[in-house]
Length: 191
Image (tube, rainbow, N blue to C red; front, side):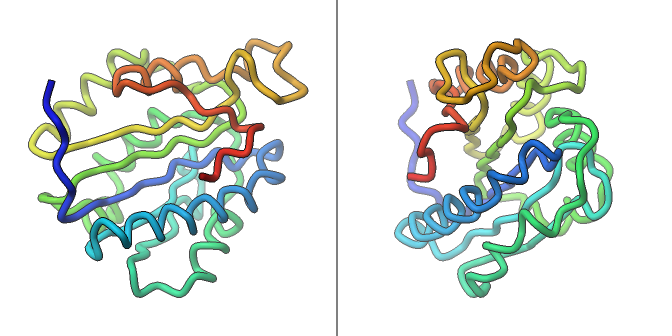
């Protein structure tokens, strides 16, 4: 067991499902990011925050935001991403990290990483969780890294949990690799 130390630098990538069913969650996402920004300010002033959607459909990237960015930029970010047709968060992160030019500018070599997956459906890329986690651990092996999954959970407050395709099993499994459970997207999860 290794106790994580306080980060000096943090890169926060929010992977947001921007399909039609998610549009009523954007205000909650904006509020949550505003609270996250306040928390980060209490830990470090050297952070970057950016958003991608889960299909990398244009416009797929919004950011880079830091402690000097106006609050309105954080609030508007979810609405500026392109609409998703595939909720494929794992492949979006992999493809963004390995192929997209914005990743080179966003990811700083020495900065710790926090990835926040937000979706009301199962991860649909076809990449098994253990394969993604293995790649993720290798890709960012030299720094601290963490995952948060805000998804539809089994005992969700959502009205549509009777459909197995809406449960974020793979996102929940990924969170378990980092010692956490998935957070119910239909709960008051901002804090």
